Figure 1: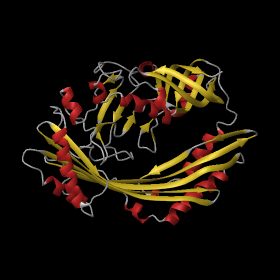
Figure 2: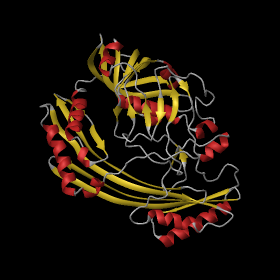
Figure 3: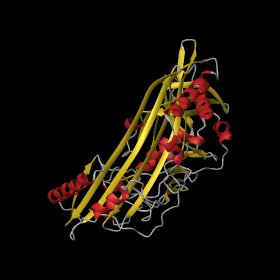
Figure 4: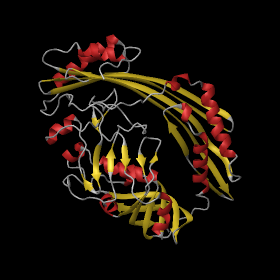
Length: 452
């Protein structure tokens, strides 16, 4: 990794600042820059074009068990030097903590990944506008019940980051992606429903505009005529997006920081069976098919594959260097951060492992129940300490093994602990979602559905 360099010297800047470290201190520099552009159109006209650059440098200094941090929103060399001095001053004021300190390379090799497409740099506003107009045009021609499009958009972004420290970390990486999205409006009588379709890839040459259009239209049309369901306990089939959201919350409870603070419902369950044997959850940023893939974590350790739940057994917690020291263990390469913040623990690239049931057979396997296609209120409706879940849902009822009437304004309640154990089927076909999560649909034996 140390041989990789960026075109404008972002890596050299980080190295230069670290070279100014004093003999009695540890210094880490995280420098980053990027650019993003979003074009939004409506009714055949450009609504907005927003483009912006982001730059920043964050510096940590550790001396005598005290950690100081300072950041600046520029890569100016002189300001970087001033930021180093500010971090030193902050360290002098900090309380001593035996668990603070910079990470040292642990010998794990960096994955060979190509995360940046040069085609992103050749995109013009004309191309962006044409892509956004095209997805809107396709949507409006797919079905007479499509009454309009709330918004159609094309977005692209790229960024690079460099992490260098006195402890031997010396990495640089660059990545990017682009996406097309659309929100169709379906109308039938007085009923109007909105759908959402998106396709995201690394290269603009691979964008599938028709996929996004069809996905959005299908989701809008499927909800026409939706009503509140009858209340009761039912089996639930979560589509891949919903599975990703719920399993992402589960993975979040497995961070070493939560465990150390006694805020995880699974903190004392390591090595135990906490889920159905059909469930495997992995954090794998080394798979280049995911837009969340990366070469290194937020502290510069090599990215690696971490199995969290293996066939129902809780296999490990995720740690960055500080949380690992507090737990008396080693970092799992799971630090996340930006240039304006210190590292935290997080999931880098979630994978919900496939099962053996073909996705097309999941509905018939349920018999009677509900297909959950969207959830809302996850942040307020899930207690990640107790595991209680109460969230809004919409989707389709399942009757006699067939999709039936659409539902909305319903609430689903269960707990994380019960949900994991109640998984009875997992789809075999993985869906790669725009955010980089790879997920599959799954069936949960029983949830409480509240409607009318």
